Image (cartoon, rainbow, N blue to C red; front, side, top):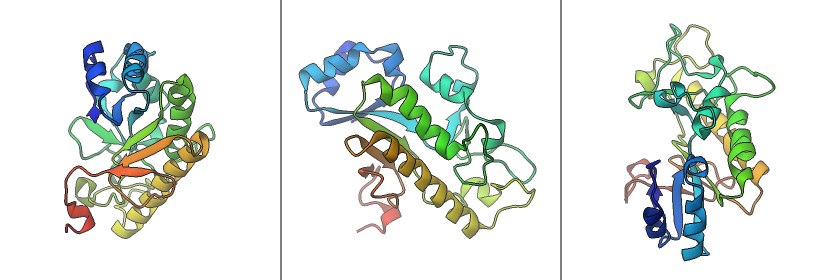
Amino acid sequence: NYYLNPAMTDAEAADLARYDIVIVGMEQQYLHPQVFQIMRQKNPDIIILAYVLSEEMPSQYLSMTDNSYPQKQLVNGIASSWWVTTPSGQKTGFWPGANMLNVTNSAPVVNGLRWNTFLPQYMHDHVMSTGYWDGIFYDNVFNDVSWVNGGNIDLDRNGVKDIASTADAAWRTGMQTIMSRSRALEGNDKVILGNGGGQYYPAMNGRLIEEFPSSLDGGW
């Protein structure tokens, strides 16, 4: 099951324990750490995954003032040069209230990291290290990016609209870096799932398909 309401109650945690796999926001380790024990007591075999967006950041976390909140800590590590921009330098994205982050190797190295290495390192150091989680669920693990903003994006920030095929290939390489780096950090005993894509095995254990049959996979 997929539960992203930060305001999880103990009763809701007990109810979620009936599922084999549960995806919850990583803020639960900070807001309600007791829910992990509740779920595991009721279902010792449950797999609990930490939800994180692989390629964007909702604006609500940028304005948050609680620096202990996991998503705010993640925001605090984002370099200004890691955002996806248009050729005119404006941030852009596809989801209302969120701007995208550049998963490609065109993003500059800042303090030894790009977004595609910073994110898995953050998840390892600040989330998986708590011992609460069985793995990570990366949302929006796309195979391409040229559809964003009608294709008017500039991943390499040269002031020119990217060629669609070039942008898409760079996006896949960058997303593969996130998944492979995360697998290397977490080892083979942890579960790594994603939503979308389907091209990042064996680093991923599987994927969430929001509709069936999936039109992205050719339907029936």
